[in-house]
Structures are given as C-alpha cells and as structure tokens.
Image (tube, rainbow over all chains, first blue to last red; front, side):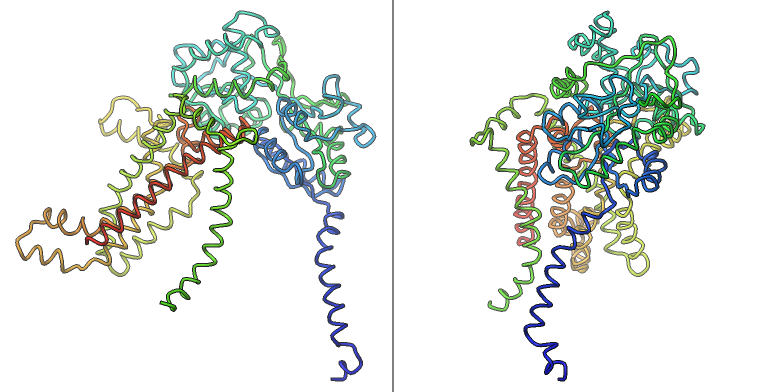
Length: 351
Length: 275
C-alpha cells in the first residue's frame, strides 16, 4: 500500500516498465547478434574431422570465433545460400570451384579483398578466382582408392577400372559429387584418345566409354563415406575419383587402403573458400578466411588432410606423386553443362 | 450434439499444426508445379510423363512400395495374432520388441544391413556353410535388399494396427465357429481374417505411404542406380536446381499417397461396417 501511495507501483509505472521490457525483448537479439562471436560455416561432409580437430579450436584462440559448421555437398551448400539469399545465415562457405561459379552467377558471394584478408596475397598464382570472389585454400589430389589386401599391385592405369577381372568390384561417384568428374574425364581421355586438354570437351566419347564400365560397377554413390566403408571392408576393390584428404588419413590409421596415381594422370580437387554476400558477422567472417589462408592453418590442414597448401610460404602437406601429370579442368565448361551431364549420367547408369 | 462440437475443438491444435506445417507448404508446392515463368501450365507434368526414365522410376517406386507392404503384412500378421493372445510379461516383451527398433536410426540400420548382406558377410557365410549356395550371392545394392530393409523399418506400422483390431475382437467368435465344427483354417479365413481386415487396411496404408515416399533407405541400400521418386525430387531441388520439376514429382508422390490413404479409409469404413 505504501508503495502505491508513493507512486512507485501505479498504472503509469507499470506501463512504462512493460514498454521498457518489451523494447528490451525486441532489441536484445539484435544486440546479441551484433556482439556474437558465432559464425556458421558451410563445408563438405568430408571436412568434419579437421574442422572439428584443427579449425574450430584455432579460430577460438586466434580470432575469438565460435565456429558452427554444416558439412554437406557443395551443391547442397549452394542451395542453402540461394534459398536464404534475403537473410543469409552462413557467413563463409568452403565448396568446390564449379559450384563457386554457379554461386557467382546467382550473385551469392561477396568478393574477398586483400585489405581485410591480407594472407590472400601469399597464395600461389591461380588460387584467387574471378577477382577475389573465392580462393582455393588447400588442394588434395584425386586418383583411385583401392583395397591393399585385394589389389597388392595397386592401380597403375585408369584402364584398370574397365578390366574384366574388376567385374562388380568398383564404385564410382555420381556426377552430383564434384569428384565424379574424374571418372568422366578419364573416360573422355580413354574414349577419345586425346590429351586431357582436348579430351575434357569430348563428353560424348566419355559417356560411350562410361557405358562400357557398367559390368564392373557395384554401385554409384552420392554418400562417399558409405562407399569408402565398403572399400575398407573389401566388398569392392576400387573406388574411383577418391582424394588424398580422405584416403591417406584413413591409410594412416592402419586401414588396408591406399590412393593410386594412375599413369594417365591425376586431378586437383578444387577446394575453395568464399564470403557469403550479406552474411552475418562480416568482419569475423573475413578474419576466418584470413586465418584459413594463413601459414598456421594452411600447414595444419595440409598435413592433417594430406593436401597441397595454397599459401606459397608453407612447405608442409601432401607431396604430389612425381612423374604423373596433374590436371585441373575447365570449371566454367563443367558449371555450364553439369546439370545436363547429371541427367544423362543417371539415365546411363540406371539399372 | 453441442457437446460433440465442443469436443471437436480439442482437435483444433492438431489441425492448426497440420494446416500450417503440412498442408500449406504442400499447397504451395502443388501450385509451383503448375507455374512456368509465371504462367499456369501443365508442361512440367507432360515433360515428366513423356520421359521413359521417369516412368521407370515411377513404376519402381510403386513396385517397391507394394512389395514392401506385402512382405511387412506377411511377417506382421502372425506376429499380431501372437501379440493379441499374449498376456503379462510376454505382451510387454512383444511391445518393446516392436517399439525399440524404431529408436535406432535408419543410417545405423543401413550400415548394419551392409554387414549382413555383403558378399563376405554373415548371411552369405551361413548360406555357404549350410551348403545352400556354392558361391556368394550378390545381395547389396539389389531391390530385394531394399524391400527387406524397408519392411524391417516399417514393420511396427503394420503390426500395431492389426494387433489393435485383433485385441478388440470377441474371442468367443472363433470358439463358436469351432463348436459348430469349423476347422482352424476355415475359422481363420471366415472369422478372424474378415474381422481383422480394418487393421490390415490401416497397416497397409501406413506402410505403403511410408514406403512410397522413403528417401534415406533407398539412398543407402540401392544407391543412385535405382532411383525412386523421392530421390528424383531431391536431385531436382538440390542438384539440378529445377524447382518446377521437383514440385511436379513431389505432387505426383503426394497424389499417390493421398489416393492410398483415402482409398484405404473408404475400404476400412466399409469393412468395419460389414463386420
């Protein structure tokens, strides 16, 4: 009663208090967002191990960022960016070059600038694309993964995939997965008889050669971990298009697998990193990219994931097999034709 | 009557939830399938049905769903009879056995099946050691493996409706038939089975609807070479970035599922009225 009589708890003060509380409630998320140290990174499912063990702890220490990452395929990351274009929730995305091209075409990326990301100036030539729309950060090499218990001689040539003794012993990636392109381009080289630079455009020859592969195929995968599991179990003896950042760490744990570099050539996996246009926490996102391109992270990831670093000041990481050409295709050509190729491939491989 | 109307209000939260989370998005999807460049068109449907690959996928989806339903029914019916007659601890054991596997994720189950079905796996070893087969049979990535796996996942949805109907059945009816000289087979086909049909229809509707729209199970068990409508939908949205095609396939899938649910509901009502 005393409080009321002094006006401390009258109708006006209650209304005022309610208004302040309502304003506080509405304003709080924005304030918290502005001060948040959390950024969401889209990456590949196969990145999970090193994102958890290396990147997340480093980013907390170096730039004070709490990293949340969503590991999935590049094309799914692209769809997430496109669906949330008006209100992006991803700040940075790590995905493959052909999908980066589609993201640029859809106006989903913000350019990476050297003033906010100084480490990009140390990258090797060709690692910065479309005036900084994305950068390659590490580069695993891709060949043919095989089970060492069942193929002690390894895989010396891409033609081994077509050998009659490999009947039912092979799984290849779908063209929905970027690594699926390696089987397609190998088929193009073998089918057309031309060098890679020309063969990569001989898609009809590639599909004709791929048709001959069908008796040897146990399956076509979109989920790589499941296919790799079958390779480890010996259910298949070869997994085409696999890459050093996945096979070699598994080999190091004692699993009977290895990665072959067939004599016709191996492929450079196009691992890119980009800033999402209008993504949350842009300063922290730029700091994240800068760290990813910096010598510490480059050395750590390259070592962990057996990849070639993009930063020229770093000497760690995988060694590209000698005496074998390494190819990087015309990704613009891939991006322009990929949808049609996926439909054609699915129909060709269907049972 | 007024009291019934008031009781009907209790369904309001559920109906609102379904309207917002289920019906509205599906309606938008349906509309999208008839829109091409802002114009109303059935071109996407015409395109879908003119492609023999899509028709193969449609037929495979229906065939797998039908065979999964059939296999689940064959396994579930005797189980439901046993459960309906079980009492005490045995009934609890049956119920736990039905519900517990549902808590294990499909991904885990799919990996477990790959251990059983693989060429050098448990099943092939057993068949060869028993002298049934001379060499390993390829089971992984086959339609048979998919049907067995799907029936395994959806089994509780078949068992529980049949069990619920059998449990309510008057146990004196088969006894009366027996007292009139009916053999066990005659009693089953003329008393038990007709009375349990509403449960069978409900179970079949559940399993068929789930099987026709399953995505994760075929993706993991048969892979990309034997696509189903759900896999085509995902491919259209995520990889081809063709929303109109994705919406069209989703709508076709929806029409199939709605037809099955309405048809089975009508059948269950008729059978219920007759029995």
